[in-house]
Amino acid sequence: MSVRTPHRVVVLALDGLLPFELGIPHRIFGRPKDAGGRHLYEVVTCSVRPPGPVQTDADFAIMVEHGPETLATADTVVVPASYELGPVFEEGVLTDELAAALAHIRPGTRLASICTGVYVLAAAGHLDGRPATTHWADAERLQQLFPKIDVDPDVLFIDDGDVLTSAGVAAGIDLCLHMVRRDHGTAVANDVARRTVVPPHRDGGQAQYIERPVPDPQQAGTTTARAWALGRLHEPIQLRDMAAQESLSVRTFTRRFREETGVSPGQWLTQQRVERARHLLESSDRSVDQVARDSGFGTAQSMRQHLQAALGVTPTAYRRTFRTGAGGTGAGERERRGGVGAPS
Image (cartoon, rainbow, N blue to C red; front, side):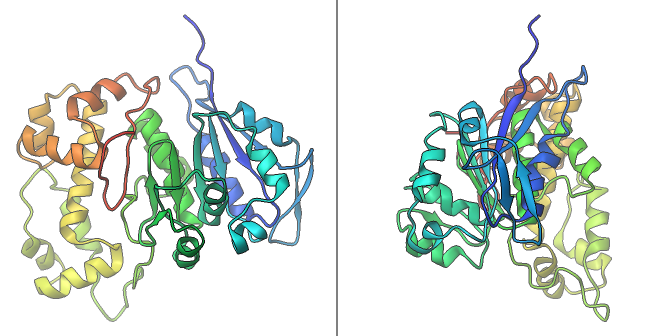
């Protein structure tokens, strides 16, 4: 039996980079292992220049030991944010140095950006005719510089098959976890999330900007209602019952729920039920009908419709891809505003 070669993730470190964002791919992709304890990913950092220091937006530089030719070895290239993109950010054109570096990337390589790293992919022409996102504060400028891109400023990340983009900072964690989930299933991604002490899943369509992420101490929040609902996803859950857990009217509860989570109670429930269904399809031998009932969809047809909309695959296809664990090849998803479309 041949030994699986780890999927190689190459992170492109540009001058002016944010050290936090540079570390995200290493933290997320550096954790997953197969049943034999072997790493599923190999993460390497490279620069657009020969090995040497790369300036950050902090008061220190980072020594990068690999040059641009390393991009030719990548299965996935991740471009974190930079505050010194120069002509890329101002005029939408690549510098000669950056263009030469990107030319090393092989056709078919998966590309991903975090925050303003999207400008690099856009200037290289990888986003023409595609949906993309970035930090909400930069979205308008991105759209003006690159009118061929369908910029969505409201979502955490967009998966368009072989090109993925995310909003700023913490959304990069969501994006990388999503790629692990797409490659190896929810069990592997959830294990990485637990070890990293972050939420295991924030849907790509969740709002970037939430009006009041921390409830006013003088007002009731919706945490109790969400915990109550998670404990009974297999049952019919009415909006009025969730509101009653916080002793709020349906109208007030709905407004505060959206302010705290960025989505409506109905959207949130669907997201949680999709996650429950994914977990059961991966980790249990229950029939599709039973999984549908246990995750709250009621019927296999209803679950099939929701998984098709969110993941682009049927329950049976999803189980076939991920039931064997970390060795799966990945179903592929396109998540945008809750996940629409099919794998490209």
